[in-house]
Length: 79
Image (cartoon, rainbow, N blue to C red; front, side, top):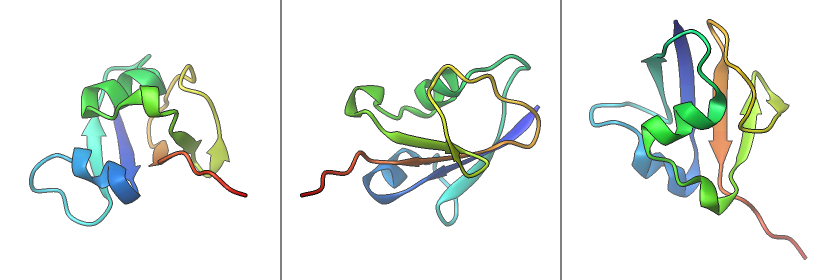
């Protein structure tokens, strides 16, 4: 199935070679979880990224479905 992975800020360095803009369409097996997609892309999950799927905040255990758009941002600190 196809999903779109969008990486922002410092995570853009993990986009595959040849990707344009901030995202790339990826083919993944049915049943793939968000965390597995991020691991496949090489995004370090120990940095506790903020993850949105279709514009909603989720955790990395969510199972993906055809056409999902996964947006990943570095964790932010505020004050």
